[in-house]
Image (cartoon, helix red, strand yellow):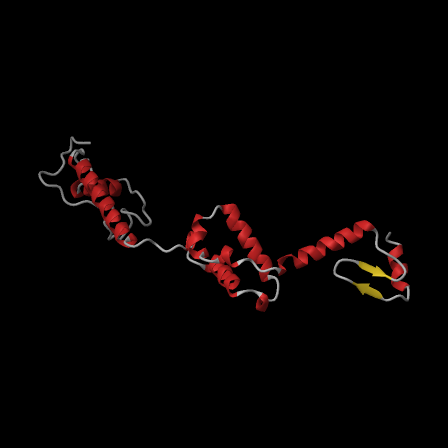
Length: 197
């Protein structure tokens, strides 16, 4: 079959193209090629007929309630219609295509009235509940450890100086002016004794 095409092209007979069949004066395409050509023409001309107005009227109100398969079929039909010249499309088709592509439905749906207030009050309630739970836990918690006071941490600084810990940049370095280990408020009561850990 491939060898017949160059011979057909070299013949002097003009090529006449018809939407449903291709033929020349001297040869015909095989039946399989005619079927393929016919299917291509059917696909190309499938979207020529306008979609009926009852199908498109009130699409804004009906779209969310339509089954997904019906939504997909309508969108595919509109997509095929948009492949032709847009001057041939009806006004209803243009409106429906625009609304389906860009309208406020699905993820672009508008929030219901009062949604912002509801979010604000539920967020405030969650923060208040978390604060109450935190306060109750703190009421029943153990006291802070004895090492979490300024006096004990000052003693830790002295110990580190005696051990010459971090002699380059730390507490035992020359001219050190930082706080060292001190990070807590001073302790109420007597300073920690020598016998304490």
